[in-house]
Amino acid sequence: MDLGLKGRTAIVCAASKGLGRACAEALAAEGVALVLNARDPARLKQTAAEIAAAHEVEVTAVAGDIASAAGRAALLAACPAPDILVNNAGGPAPGRLTSWCADDWSNALESNLKAPVAMLAAVLDGMAARGFGRVVNITSSVVRHPIDVQGLSVAARAGLHGLVSTLVRAHVGRNVTINNILPGPFATDRLISNFTFRAKQDGVSPEAALAARRAELPAKRFGEPQELGRLCAYLCSAHAGYISGQSILIDGGAHPQLL
Ligand code: NAP
Image (cartoon, rainbow, N blue to C red; front, side):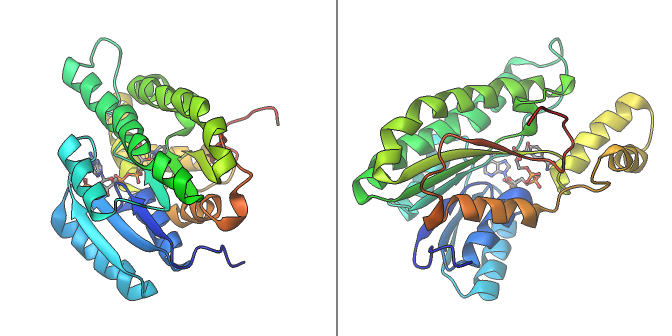
């Protein structure tokens, strides 16, 4: 299916690897020009070059911390009028209520709540004026199915979901949609670092913790980032203008729920 995105421009935050990169690749495959962000300039530059070569689209790398005003300003200066915004950032530190320090709270709120909100504030009016806009926020399945050690993630991301729910109706009439993708366990570095934390708690090796989790998943595997990337591209497509304000769980059936 042609997603009707050829010639569009997207900002993809936190996109040098993992789920952000997969979203960037899926959009590039549809002919979308990209402006990519991540903190490590060397890895971001390499990712940008690889995507540009594979898909013959313009890919601009703007290194910076999406949690900082300067990082966001640089990104928006490179792409002041995006058609598509994919909000993403690193996830908060796992832990316990009594172990998170003020910096942990500040990092989680800056990266996973205030940064996407600031990006939304910067782009929504322009999208509405131009009559096309797609925003996808990558959040987490923990917003719907909390995990005890992911309290910071739940707290910050639930705030973003709440805010989005107040924005949808004012924008959908101008063909601007905002949706959240809630990943379950996907095979990325983030998953491995989470399992390293859990393995330490349980006194087993990270490999054993990963294997045990894989075995208990209904799909018997972790999600592939490309699967999430293609969902993101569809939500950004010309055909998805009637889907807005949705939080779409992509977890291989890992979380039981009434349909
Ligand atoms: P990942 O493989 O570790 O990739 C993270 C990407 O984000 C990298 O490109 C990293 O590059 C960039 N990044 C991190 N912090 C940043 C910042 N402050 N500013 C700009 N770029 C930043 O992680 P992932 O698995 O793709 O996870 C992406 C998001 O989905 C996270 O919020 C994670 O919590 C969430 N999530 C993941 C899973 C999963 O199973 N993988 C499940 C639920 C939710 P630099 O380090 O160079 O900045």
